[in-house]
Image 1 (cartoon, rainbow, N blue to C red):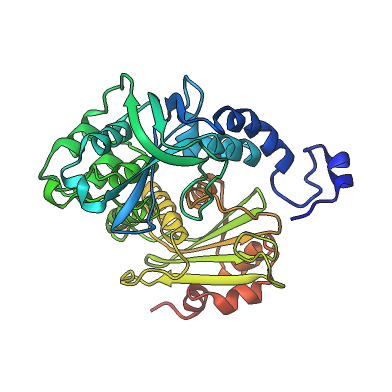
Image 2 (cartoon, rainbow, N blue to C red):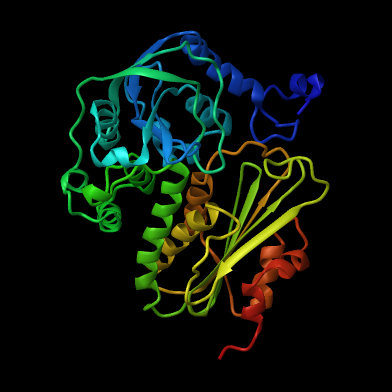
Length: 405
């Protein structure tokens, strides 16, 4: 995207006159110090948040990337989605792009009997707090960041020669049990960790490095797959309880506007059903060259679904947040969640953005309505896309408009 220099002079990173929800000048300025500190180097030492990424290219052989910033101290915010939500987008990008990565290739089944290097990566992933790490690399680092629709951004990478760990804080008892119990099924471990207060972002990291599951069946799982698997497994468990709860007694509408996005949610007095929809404007990450907004919607009825949603991992990230909200309320409902993404939001930054924003959406105070038409009209007042376009794509609105059996 070419930006008129006169806009930068007038804006100075405060008014977003270029239309982007972040200032690229500030991103570059904040990241420059750290990028320059590692670019061209063949070793990097610092405090890993901890951070590990598992790629999917070449599966069933995959690359595993332990990551470390060139700074020491409390770096936990670099791997905390709750903290990311409160950051300005340029601060978030800059803080993530300083994570230098060392890559090592493994067969996915090597998690069943890991060698020294993979075992050290697993031990690092278990840590509840930042840990001292040194990466010895085969080649100098090049400033080539990674941007992905499922995982958060990462900084430059180079093949790993060796990984050295300093003293590590011991993991929580529930995490240690999940790792060391050779007969503990992965699904049960995921649920136990979640009930014990371990964040889903960390659980997905443990699953991806092959630290969970019955020992003889453990595998390395690409990060983008582990994120969706954890979101789905936990929301499935939560919804087992939700489906036994009474229905909400009115239509509840939630609205959240943030960083070039609008999220709206409707809870309707029906048994649990769910819909997730996205409208991407031209000039956004997944409609960069289009001439009109592109809308995609997927859904599930009372019995759930047996196929993977075409809309991708955001479907389950938002579903988890909705399931958490319903269980907290002690109610079930038909859930309609729509997201509009506006011009300038042109960087894929991971499904965490959806999960944490929908969680925040349901912490807002809702507007209450006795009539579906009034609830939809209120939603329309906060959306840019005409409501009839959303209606034409929506499955649940059609069902909600039909007589209740």
